[in-house]
Image 1 (tube, rainbow, N blue to C red):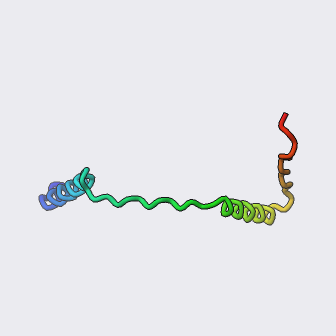
Image 2: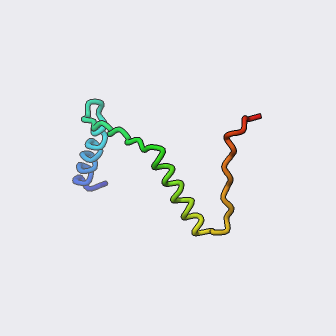
Image 3: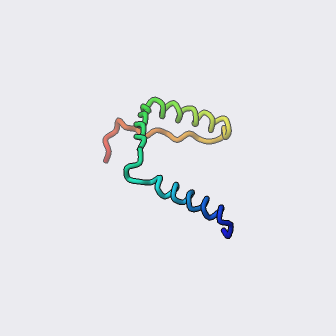
Length: 72
């Protein structure tokens, strides 16, 4: 940093960086996230389960809980 030109360039770069976060700086609003339905999640889960079955065919699938019986 003993070179005067380098000092001037560093000072300008620092000012440009610091002043870019001004409170009145233009702001681009974030786009709202798209909501994906439960169907997409379900299809993804089915696809991943099928892939897991192909990779490790010896795995036992977990049984679904019986929802018709009342909880004790």
